[in-house]
Length: 271
Image (cartoon, rainbow, N blue to C red; front, side, top):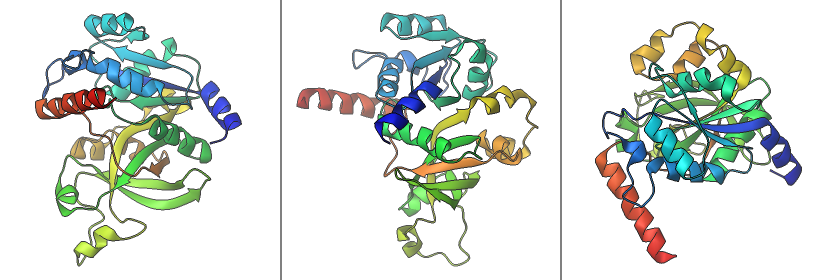
C-alpha cells in the first residue's frame, strides 16, 4: 500500500475492540496483567501498529475495563451487558464511534496480531467494492488442524488480485473439515493455492453493513455452527478474504495466557 493509499484508508477506517469482563473459559481475561500490563492494553497497542486506520476504540460493558483503558491513555465507549456478540456490541456503539466508512472488529483476546495483518483486512475490503465485509485466512497444512473444530475453516473461491495480495471470496465457514475430498490424501494439504484455510477472526465492515445488522434475517447456519459470520453468508453479503502466512495465537484458556506471558517476557529479555 503506498503512502497516498494509506492516508486515504486512515481517513476512512477505525479499529474497534469489543471487550467484555465475563469470559467463561478464562475469567476476567481482559484485565489479567502478569506481564505488567492488562491483556486489553496489549491488544490496543497491537491495533495501534496498523497504519491503514485512524483511531482505536474499545467498546465494553465493564466499568473496570473502561477504567483500565483510560489508565493507559486509550479511548473506551460503554455498552450494555446484553450484547450477544462482539459485532452486536459494536453495532450498539455505532453512534459514539468516529464517522469512518470502514470499521475493523478486532477481538480483545488477539494481542499478537500484526499491524500489517490489520492493514491487509482493510486493503481487501477497499479492493472489492462489491464486498460488505472482509476478513483474513491462513493455510491449514496439518491433518490435526483440519480436524480441530476450534480452528474454523473457510471455503474460498478466487476473486481479484491486488499489488498487496490475492483476494478471495469466502463462500462458507465451518467447524468441519471442508471442503471434503471424496478421496482424501495428505498431499492435498500441500496444494498451491491451498484447498484448506483457517479463518482468522478479524473483520473489516463497511459501516452500512453494521447499520443494517439488526435487520438482517436470522441464520439457522450461524446457530448450528455457532459462527456469526454465517449470518452474513445467508444474508447474501459478499465477504472478501486475504491470506496471511500464519495466524497469531488468540487467548482463550489459562494455558493460552501462560504461553503469551512467557513469549512476552522472552521478547522483553531479548530486547
